[in-house]
Length: 103
Image (cartoon, rainbow, N blue to C red):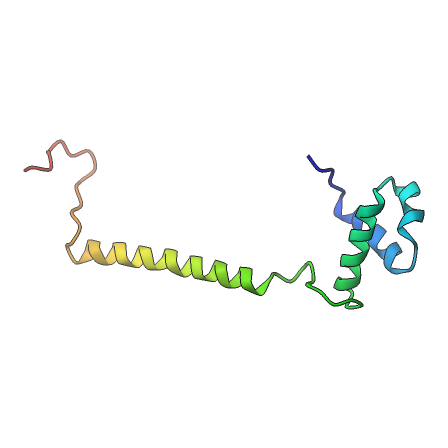
């Protein structure tokens, strides 16, 4: 299981990285892997607008579109089920009914 750092810890490290401190310098002090610090720095530069890339706080456009499609498909299924129910296409039996479906 990967180790997770608190948001405040990561933000403080990112501020120092963007300010110009090298990951090798922070590695000894913060006890965080150098590769992790480089990854944090890269994302912090993107978030600050100093480097091109997808910002961490902006959801991907494709992912948003796919979620919207799924939501609309789920809604359509509910509408179809309600339509069948109200048009008499689907038989609704009372809960706890002792009668068989052959009656």
